[in-house]
Image (cartoon, rainbow, N blue to C red; front, side, top):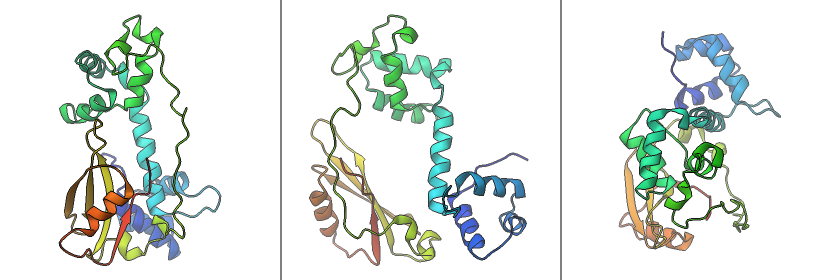
Length: 237
């Protein structure tokens, strides 16, 4: 039987059944999964300090771990290597290459940071000077964290993992999530994507800039009222 990764909805079921005091065997039977799979999931993705299993945090950890495994050595794959080198010579940015690779070759993936590290690793590039194809043509890469980014702390914010179970289980209509997607880097524009959790209905708006006030105005200018609640991604640039 082919193994498949646990879905977010399955992790929610695990959290709920653990709170009800159900055994590993009972949980695995409910999910139709091997008891060893459930046991490993809880051991790997629960909070190491409190021992508590929170579905949304567990899912985030699992997704990050899976991405890391895929990105460990992608340039050893000849197909990915040739694709990256070709696109660099066409003056594509590492971000554009990483994004387009998933479309052109759905089974392959690479992180843009991996491409940057490869470009500036003289031993691996063997003197090809791939940095010449980048926008700023720098021989050495600037420090990634050279400038401190000021972030705004939101007072009395409600943590996403403390939401009601009905929201996590998507039992009711009216709970929305919103986040920005990258637009043109030249003018700092962006897209505002807002999705209703149960129906997966999506709204898209073009933002002239990435300021929080612009996004708030865009949401409030909608011709209808967004019911119940809306959860925003609080990462600031």
